[in-house]
Length: 245
Image (cartoon, rainbow, N blue to C red; front, side, top):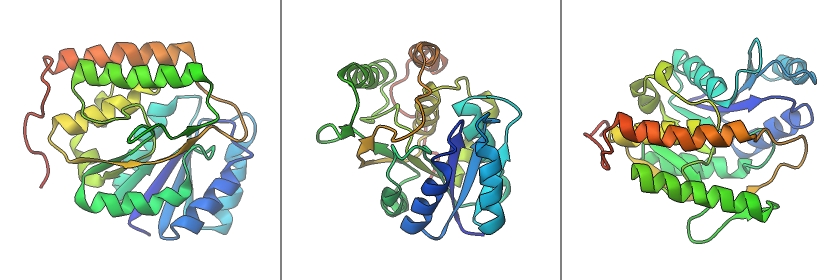
């Protein structure tokens, strides 16, 4: 078993799972992959089972239904913690996150407890998004920083690397959110406990196949969760203590 685990949630990603696994291992052969499949009706789970038979670095959790992004990652984190992985990454299946960046995350995590891939440091690094979605994303980032004080440039981004100590410290069963607000909540929780958060620039490319899972419910959840997090911590705008050395 390797020390690093890349967790990739899937729902209807049959055209992406084989090439994304190949690209991950081309970039970082020492990583294990865990696909968390939400009972995809297009047969994604069966394809991953076939991949698993040929490569022991590939693993899969089959969810019973469409549980959502947050639940997929939480179940993936628990799976990784049970198997003593030192580092765990979040990554999309659709190539919006460039697998070649994985090595840069592992370099950065040597001096941090959690590393976020940011689309907005020193400019905007997004390809093929409509202007409306870019405005929504940038507005959300500003909104999160304004309400919570979380000092990162891209709080809704989903390309991340955690040390296991961070995931052990966060009570995963008490995570409120399930959509993209999950990304905010995880980063905010780690920051509030005093863990060191690093950021590295990435280029985000809109998916090359399949379809987006974005919905109005996901956006609404994100706006609401930010306030819940702030209230829960009495609008404190700095960590309460040092969680890690």
